[in-house]
Length: 219
Image (cartoon, rainbow, N blue to C red; front, side, top):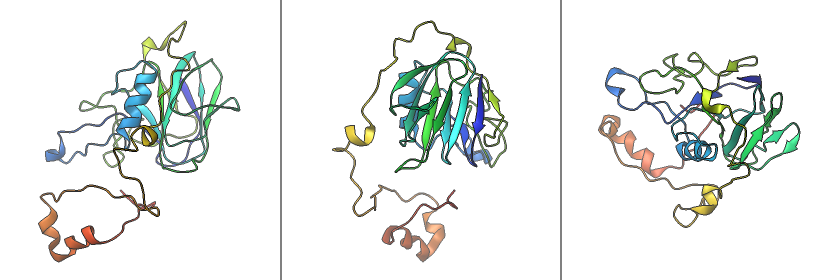
């Protein structure tokens, strides 16, 4: 088990999502940064679709109740284990009672905590992801809160962690030649018009001609 010690709003449990149900009004949900989830799971020996903790409001902290492998990926949340600073994008081994804390990242938005064995939460419509709008999946369909206890998969029991200290180069560095860099804080994003585009009439053209900002009210 892991126990949530401190958490803000909108921190949830997510995997790679539940595509294929939009026709009945169920959104795909899933992690905003699926690459970070995949890498975190690989570092701790999980299937790449194992559920992870998505942290987007900080500070965030949890206590490990068993010996377990973990990795923090995504935004650099300045991870600390019992006060000792850790590297992001790197696998570590925690002992029972140790506390992992993530502080406000200096840049980017979301951090992910993957644990060996994955999070043992029910699969709903093929996914463990939290759907806040639907009120199901993840942690009973709601954000994490102080005092919540989340079960960990049975195969988390380990005597030795071969991947301890195994790390990857942050994707934004490793792939800087593939993806365009932000210019004056503005990031170009590739987009395609979908079926709803014509429903916006002339207003739809504003999407392509303006600079947009992701705010706290974004959905």
